[in-house]
Length: 65
Image 1: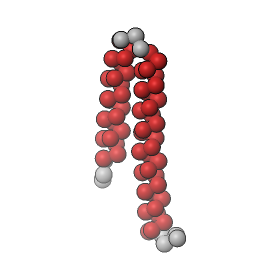
Image 2 (image 1 turned 180 degrees about the vertical axis):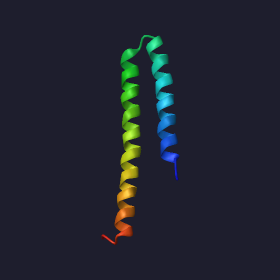
Image 3 (image 1 turned 60 degrees about the vertical axis):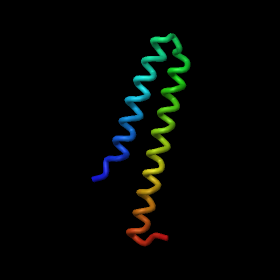
């Protein structure tokens, strides 16, 4: 199996959580919230691209053009 997407999402999550904690400790809660929102958007873009590839593969396998 290919776990690249899972590792990318996990890496982004870890990075965002660490940066979020640093920003909250510095008293910049608004920037931390925007950073978290940006991380969610990036992960959603990755997932949507993967779903698009999945649908393309299903169309190719079943000859649905």
